[in-house]
Length: 169
Image (tube, rainbow, N blue to C red):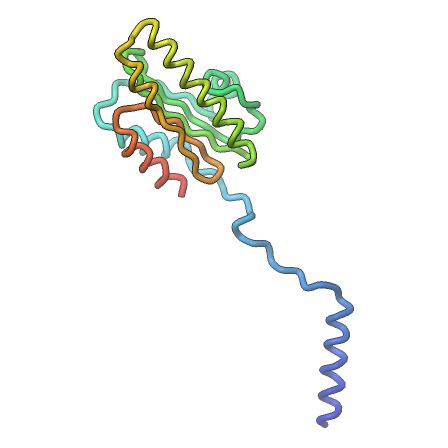
């Protein structure tokens, strides 16, 4: 009986070796994580900065989302999974919030370069008609978490940054 058990065990080991390498299950961290709700994220970020004026918002759910995205970034819109941009409706304040979710995190550095150019464009614009807004625009922050990047231009950047990070984690 013992010999039979040893033979069976040896046969199983031999078959297992012939079956090829053992396939490890996919690491969960490499699977695509669904995008968070841009509407909910925008709402949380705007609520984090009290006293905002009326804000106009555009997003990837708009009919002409690609054309509207071009106002924010020169990145190829095909690389974007979703985004929103909210800015002061009257143009009298330098409040601006944007979040972009990329399909591939490898494109984050290219997106960051375009967002920095956007901020510089806003600073230049404010210098020409509202110099009192230059300081706030110049202090804008760009924050990255995973495949998300946020542009935060407001007085309480720390609170809005915390809302962004809480929303995408």
